Image (cartoon, rainbow, N blue to C red; front, side, top):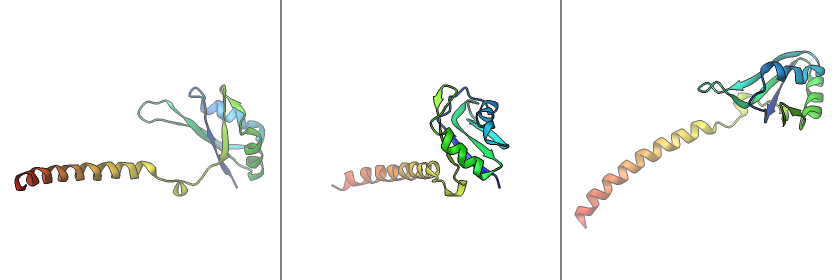
Length: 117
């Protein structure tokens, strides 16, 4: 079964092909992808490599973590499934929306309170 690896701290210039070449010595690569920002089209500085053999993937983690790709030392670990990752972006958005609503309410209370005192 294939195992997906997370590769972090990539130089922004690293391409999918360069990422694949860096891991080619560990066996058959099912996929290698640098994650790009949808708005800017630039690399987000991390990517994923999927190796077809679990043993080769474990070997790649131990040998590639800390190695240089594109002039930067990379961090390599087993990728976490999406449902296991914290969803900080959604929480922050909800917090901002709720905070804005509370501020408007408190502002109305101050005006009314000023007339009573």
